[in-house]
Image (cartoon, rainbow, N blue to C red; front, side, top):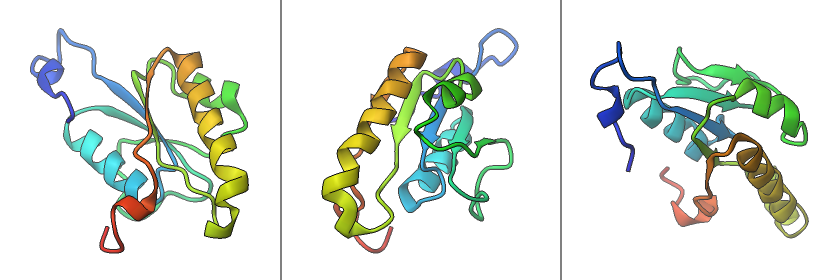
Length: 128
C-alpha cells in the first residue's frame, strides 16, 4: 500500500521519493505510475529510453545497476527502492537474479531506504 497522507499539505510536507530499478518493465512501469499518482517523486532507473507511459515528472536515471554510487547520487532522499529488475532472458535467472538483487540491496543500503522485492514476473501472470 502506498502512503499518501504525507502529501496532504505540500507547502509544509516534503514529498516521498521512490527509486524504481527496472522502471521500463511491466511491473516497474506500473509501480512508477502508481507512485506518481500517489504524489511521490519517482526516480526511474532504466537500461534504455523510457517506456511509453512513464510519468512525465519521473527523474530518469540511465545507469547500470552496477553503478551503485551513481544511482544512489541521483536518488538521494529515496525512502524506498523497488527492485523491478529481471534478467533479459529467463535462461539466465540462475546466474543473474541473485547478483541483481544484491545490487539493489546495496543501493537501498547506501540510501538508507527500504528494499521492496516483489518476486518475479511469473507471480503476476501474462496479463500484467
